[in-house]
Amino acid sequence: MKTKAESENMKKIFFISIVAFALLSCMASSPQQSLQSRLFGFWAPSDYEVTVFKIDKDSLYYVDEYPIVAVPYQFAGDSMTIVSDGDTIVQHISFRKDTLVMKNQWGDVSCLVPVK
Image (cartoon, rainbow, N blue to C red; front, side, top):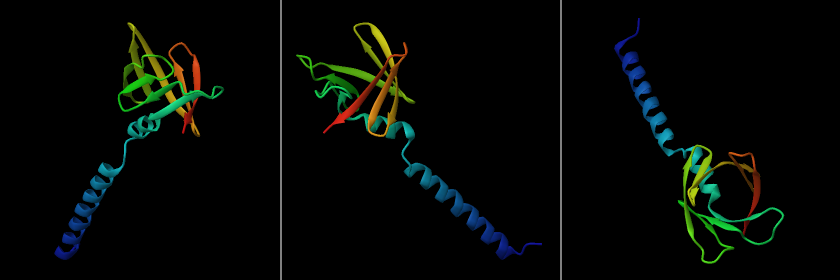
C-alpha cells in the first residue's frame, strides 16, 4: 500500500510529465511548416542556370517574365495548389538533398535547385 507521501510524489511526477510533454509539443515545428519554409527563395531548373521563380510565404513569382506577377498559392500537407488563368495545378512537394522536386497531378516532374 502506498503512503500519502508516495502518492503525492506520483501526482507531482505525473503533472510535471504532462507539462513537459505539452511544452515540447508546442516548441516543435510542424513538418508542414518546415517543408513550406524550405521552399522560400529563388529556384532554377537543375539543367538551366537562370533563375525561373521565387517562392515566398504565400506567392510564387516567375522572375524570368516581364512584368513579374505574384501568383498566390495554398500549401497543405506536402502539396502546393496554384490557381492561375482558371487552371488549378497541384504540385506534390519533396526534397532530395537541396533539390526541390515538384510532381503535378498529371505526373510531370520538375527538379529545381536553389539559386544563391
